[in-house]
Length: 124
View 1: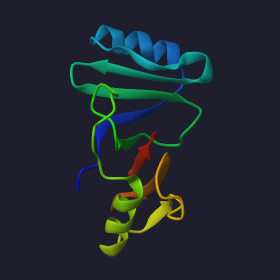
View 2: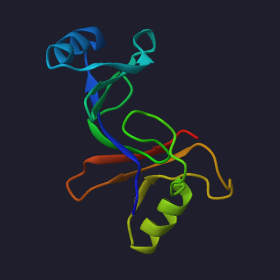
View 3: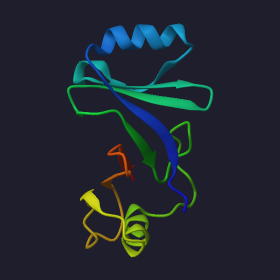
């Protein structure tokens, strides 16, 4: 199962303080808008997202259709197909992508056995 680019989405109290901290670890801004309380940082192949006031918990995030530099992939497994495959395996969903839309942006959220959220978020 190809889930796309991986990142860790962190819930932060102060996005600017977090940006400065991760800059000390070599992370630079890849995208996002601090004024809108989110920022994507990259260090080599490692990507983290900083989100202030958007999520309750840190979560694993996968982006079908993107590589680790947020560049479009020529081919990828659509989020709806991933959802269908996981449902066939008995995975329970917190939120689901609308399967009646054949393609395009969409996301779903599942929890691992310890309650850790996993977001699969397709942007194209």
